[in-house]
Length: 151
Image (cartoon, rainbow, N blue to C red; front, side, top):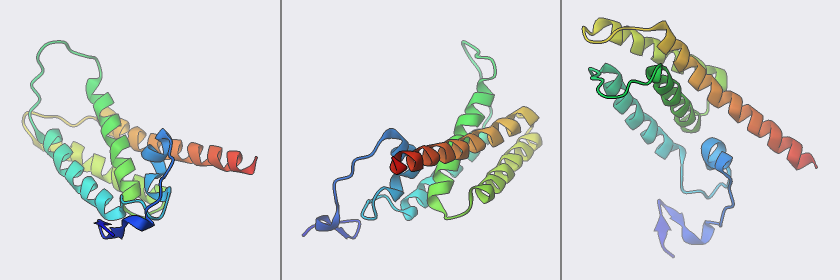
């Protein structure tokens, strides 16, 4: 039988999942799922490298300016970082929050040292709120699933 990432095809099962499974718990849907923690760790590392580069890059705004777009970007980036972090490592959500808040603080410190960037408390708050929003959504979805399972 053919192998996919070291797993026999005969051991893989068809999996029904919702959007929330993909966003929140995809690797926990079924033991035989091909997506593993190692894949999430790799994606987390690549994402960290890419966004650190983008946070350090000089911003050249041309065309239409959207108010607070940088805050929205920070929020979304840290929501995605929380997703990758949570699926990459088995830590408690509060520990992920500490790590992500520290990374956000380091990004703001780095930006304060660059002549073409500036640190912003608003960006740091958006970072923390983005990560926190992921974990709140995760908690709400799990609570909803538990209630549904009880019925």
